[in-house]
Image (cartoon, rainbow, N blue to C red):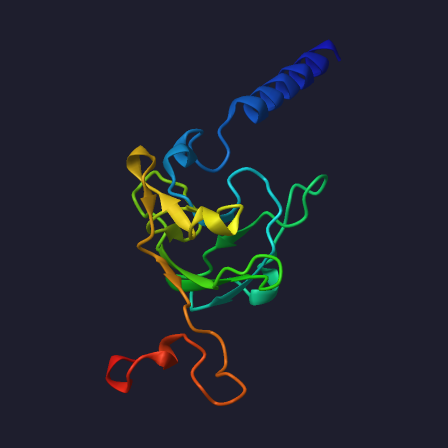
Length: 186
């Protein structure tokens, strides 16, 4: 009887030792060098913004899942996070409230690539190609949406301002946007 108890105890000790010391799935540090798979778009300092988001493109998540969120205690709309659903492009439309902000809408063109396939990696998801953070200035006079690159310089390469989203004036005259340009310049 004593032999059975000793074997049982040894087996249990071995089992628990294996459970607590074995690496499960990937190597313990394989995820440390994975590229980002999500893009942050929003305030750099947790300030409420009067904005809304929409998405279009093969790499985009469902539009209904792209919500403006805050820290859930002091702010309600400071940012969104876009996670690629496929390889390809995802255009993110940022619409500013015309009554409280007045900035023109802007489109951020995101690009997602395949997950790394190097042996020994355990990275999942579609890798962001380009910047993974875009900052929306808190105030309208703070400039347009930008990403930061090496050295903290502002980069506007993937951001496009929609200059003329308004209808023509009620009398049919141009509203001053691109329809006020000569026909050959439009």
